Image 1 (cartoon, rainbow, N blue to C red):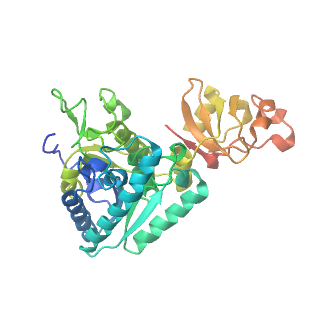
Image 2 (tube, rainbow, N blue to C red):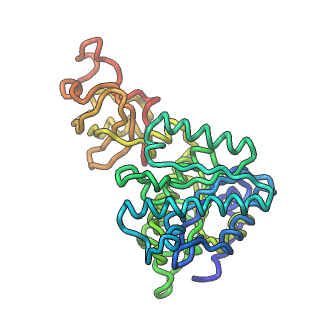
Image 3 (cartoon, one colour):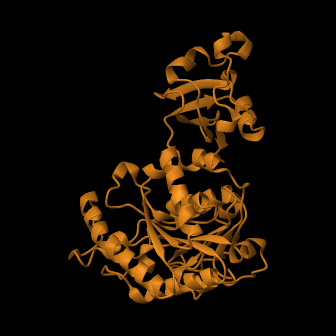
Length: 378
């Protein structure tokens, strides 16, 4: 890797990251653990020192930290990261304890208290759990603590896993109302190819999807310790940016610059307005129980005009959902365009779709999904 991709901090996006009052920082397994498994205390201490300086400068920091499974590999005598879920959970049980102890002890050296928050995908998919996580994180920050967030690998099943902590970091950034998200990994920037092979070019600023057309992003990191790769980081950046949160992507070795002048790595410009907690939950966190197919007119009304969805614009129904469930809205091309809380059971809709309100009985003339319960996803 190169020593760092420097660029002008005069960029409005970089300035937003460097001056963020509340910032979420995500660090990957390869940046905290050794290749053999176990914690790399030198790297962890360097990261904590950098975060402590940002807090001292007046920011509130939330740390989303991977590393629990990787930290449990050596203590359990395993040769590599386990592939089966049961052994992963066992490694996480051992490693999470070591990770939490290391963070608590190291942050304490800088006069800071940490609070551990372990989440599963279920905690953000379920609206009540989402609100509880929001309240806990907000209260920790208001009390002056540094929340350390990780996926609860010891109990998460294959069906309710985030898959990687990059997505978790994007969700956490919105949960706490962050002003910026910083993604730290073992790569110093986003490149248009593999920087280990050939003359790859660093992409310094991403302001629109078109900027990524020629960018090849790969899978898991080269260390073999983590589950996320550049693809998951780009997707996490898109989620955060679509909700009005700017993102900086760089390596953990450059954390001091990333959390200082933000003069390194790749920045992603915001692509949408700041969303309410409910709309963000609908668009990016909630699980969909079914799908409604829309005609072009309904897509325009829902996405561009932000109007309620009426039965007349629906062309098809998929799934077995009940009124109050979240469903995905799909346009004529088959692409998902929005999500929303449906007011009808799936069994009720076939008799209503395609019909104008005046053609329906009075008791069925309400919106299928009210505008307040809709969130575009692109």
